[in-house]
Length: 306
Ligand code: G1P
Image (cartoon, rainbow, N blue to C red):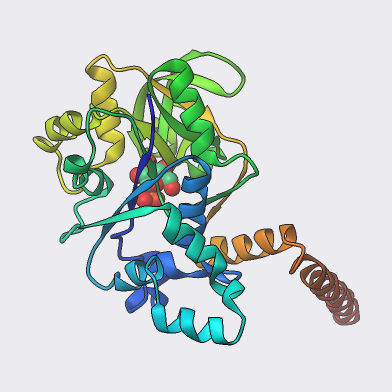
């Protein structure tokens, strides 16, 4: 079983990041000097993915431009002997193949994935949600691919979340625990209320799925109200007697679809990068000591008033 294709659903409107996302795709938010989606593609390449199927929509041209050659820029940098500035992206353009599929209407994640059905054969493939940046030496998708090979089945990435957060995620119920990090999934529920959640094991944005997801999504779409959920398609696959596993991937996950998650990602990634880390560490300790001074000042004022 060779897994060389990944779908990247990038058609969302980015409402959690307005007004920034009014004219600029959220996938192009800068994380240090690279757009968020470049981290996703790099993780894919490090996981042996060669074909990226991008599901895009209107106002997403910047993504296609980023993953394409720019002859004038290359020529300009060559003359100045500064080609290293675009080395990381040129490497990607050489190694990867991109296909762009337009999702004209926002009909849900399940629908976005379904749009790529004609580009996937009778094979297993990856799905990478670009809001979820997972930082780890061993790439998150690669970890799932390894489990998919081992179990010869679909596998989704999960992490434990606090009970009060389950309603922001798809949540799994466990059929069987295989090891500390690996579970066979009984069922999945998309964004349940806390009281209805079958566990606190939340789906995070990496999947390796069998092509059988496509007929399952067809089945679910017949009675779906509103958006077609990928989670419901995977549940249907289980009802159709396909095995699905869930794996607690190793790594730090950042949800860069919100301003707070994005700021955390920048700080977290900067602290791991020797070019940035010393500056950011110094800056944080300066801020911290200013904060402590301010806090003790306000305590003094408080004592004064009291
Ligand atoms: C999507 C999935 C959800 C998953 C989440 C992870 O939701 O539908 O099951 O838990 O991604 O980020 P979204 O955040 O796109 O609403």
